[in-house]
Image (cartoon, rainbow, N blue to C red; front, side):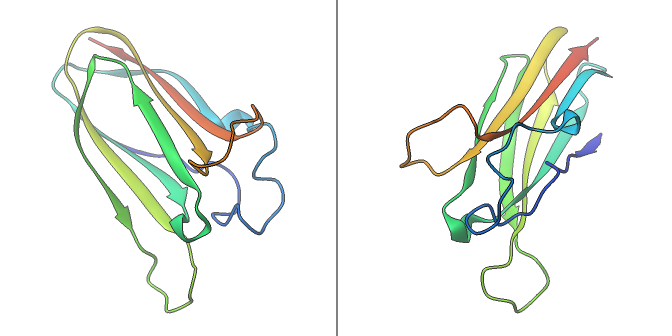
Length: 122
């Protein structure tokens, strides 16, 4: 399975407005059903040149495989790319993947851009 999740805004939250606003409805996906053993790839826009990164947590039923940043195919300095996480649906039950887009050295305000996805693994 491949889940391409666009967080609904510019990838450059360091210089554009709107990145700290309350997330749009598409930033939450509920009850995505997957069989045990299926591979799950989640892809989110990211621009680490601004200092912003996704801080990710996942439930025990999602087994972490790996992650990677994929740079854009452009020579524009500072252009954003995408960050991909790969998991295996390891155990039956309800599990969750959550991500908060923020600069790690800054205090959390509660207004950060977020992404959340619930899975039902069978």
